[in-house]
Image (cartoon, rainbow, N blue to C red; front, side, top):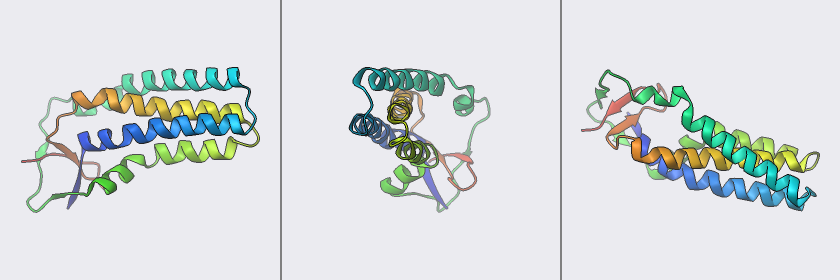
Length: 148
């Protein structure tokens, strides 16, 4: 069984999402969005998404009363790149796909979606200190385990 560290996933995906957000802001400007509307859309997307993602009660699923089961014998942590890839699916890839589709017909929407990506990155970065470094998840079953 291959597990992913919850803390490492957040640490790896946060900068990727923030950089992608800025890239989509630049793409929106290159695609013809006016500076002020693009920046307003980006900032609004960033702050609203960061707030909603960080305040989402479903994210608190790990702060439950029951103790996660110990990791099964023989379980190993996935390499960092697989953990980063796993953390990017589906949200980061989906937002980027939508931003790419919107670039030509609606560049301001691309800036907003860039803000959504950056907001997800900020929420991940803010959550890192609260994530127990001994917790890991099975990406297939979504079961949470405690590493030994």
